[in-house]
Length: 112
Image (cartoon, rainbow, N blue to C red; front, side):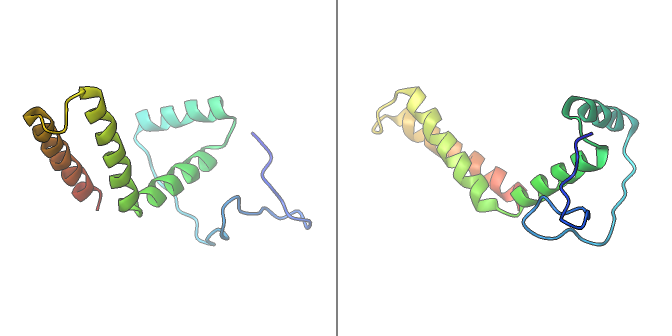
């Protein structure tokens, strides 16, 4: 396992922008997920706790920024529309924009 960062007194320091909570959270995982977690620990040379912490912070940080998700979806929509090579006046273009916008709305509402 890799060495965790420490301060000048030898105490562990947070790799994040803010201090870590004093509370410890434990979870019981399904066996198949636990096996996958162990595989990740071997691949990344990290402890199971480090991997779970990174995954949790990433998931909760991304889900608390719904505008960012819809921005990414809108950029993807624009790339897909460019690949269709339809003129903006074509009826197929308008139908595709409408369908993709409906999909973005549904995905954005599920995120919140």
